[in-house]
Length: 469
Image (cartoon, rainbow, N blue to C red; front, side, top):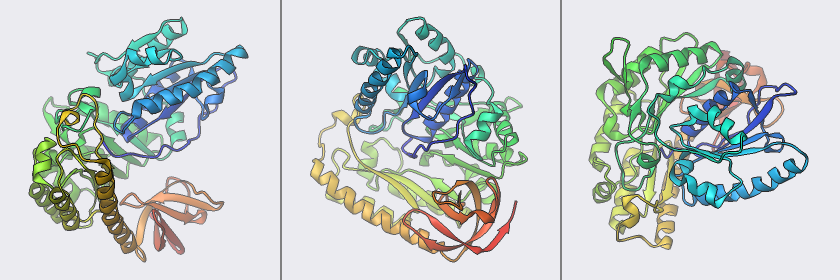
């Protein structure tokens, strides 16, 4: 899952004077955001409440990501800073436990405690439902490492979401429906840190979505490493696909917007494409990574589709939903990539046209086949290619954004803006939209006219406003 988000501060539920406080720092993708929230829920059942600062925390939990280069080193650097903070707290007679969770925890395991003895426990992404027991052992003085793949279903073991916590987190929410990956792309660590593909049953997903809607959530994003590979058990014992699940979720009262990420081109079936045609609640935005436009490099990456397969798939999706906007991932400088291979990628970008993208220089991940391949591309070549690719992608994003200027769009108001008197929402295509606070309140979906475009945001002209829900 290569789609990254900036984790912003959020309001914490007020703590009682005697409550233990936990600060969770989240790195990486949306799935880690979801995991952090569910870990906080599990700790909440054990008497912990979230805080927005490590300075007053009785526990600090780093929920880590292993996708980017030097991810582990960044965690160790953070642990060095936390060691000083814990020493200060202990000098004042106060407790601070330190834990490492997520994909770096899964990859590094006991090595984390060896290199950073300040860490009290290490817990992988498949075992965080055991967090209260792990914390209890750590508070008793044990150094705990829990990175085995759990036999039991962690989602069944997690407590139900607390309504107050859900409300504090806002009117949008993530909901994990699928974990793991069976694709084994040669550049990717996910199969090794998240395990094989597993799909949650329909009953679990629908029940969690209903609870979110009852707590005021109006938009849910379904998450998975390969979310469109989801095939969960339905109420009748049969297997459902993602298109059918989205139709079921669209029937939930109060749940007005649906999204999903991240998808693999090989798992985009006809029923899911038709869901984009049929469901007004399913937003016209699709993150569909292709990684390269060169068939030779796609084969070396073990993607098992060609550039023309991808083009034909995009044509089918756009025929079903003409207003859909595409996002994607691109890796430049994969081992063996030539100038001709890179130009194939540029050609694919020109052919498809993207509203938003994520692009990276290839960096080897230990343990992946790509790390041992010959033909590693020089850093200066990778850097030059990335600059060229990003210049083209930036042009496409700007063209898409400018094309929205003057249009009236439905915007879900999510939070206060940076300036007094502002509210910020999201367009159907996921861009932030800055509005005047008089347009409505957080949680409303309002029609606003876009009068200006900045680099990454749309600015609403508040003279033409109509509340739609």
